[in-house]
Length: 315
Image (cartoon, rainbow, N blue to C red):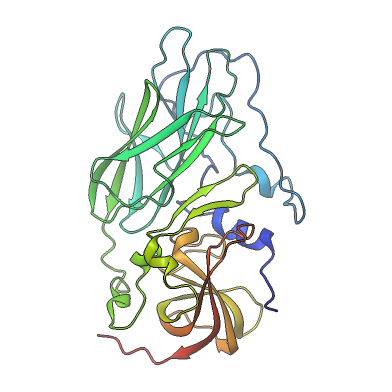
């Protein structure tokens, strides 16, 4: 039986650092002051089993007075919708922006509180973008027990794109400043004939549950690949402290750090190789049997079994 990666490692990989993480907030001026809340924000539930330390679990929404919060204007005695992102900054009186590289996901957490400062649970929150960029998550989800929903957007076209989040009559917006990263010559490598494209894998939609497991909707195209032998081109993200890796991640774009998996759960594949593959930082081509991961407790949704290194001939 294949050894599965501990949930703590994959969870850290998907949430711990980088501009696309969910909630590791940094100080900056507020859009507008929120009404005084009666109680402090509840702490999120801690996972059982391979639990993270308190320090590792600080990736959560900031308190009421956090400066990087984009807030809606609440009606009297009505709810307040607040958006959070660790990289948001203010460019004008009512304009907030996130810088993001083209093809890289940006994650935005929306929180809905009532007039008393209590979480609004089970309310449908939706997200739309002005240029219909691909979503890394479901387009709409219900708020969890602390009134939150996290969305992921992966813009591909450089320029500005407005992201609008709605919860009933409440609405809040934030602008993505999409920067073209022309230095990344890896873009389009998976267009080689016979290679499974990352665009196909990214068609699946992922939602994070409160217990940090994943709720996944696999696309029809991806479901048809279950058990098939496929070829993938990507970048190695080592998981073992050895020069040759038999268990590692293959990711869609060069990793910026160990704890930041580019592309999120749908942009990474857990690889089990037939024999050790030497660590390398250039793109690699692998062949193996493609599997969908249905037990969503490790942070990934795809697996490549019996993988072997193939010769990559660049166009």
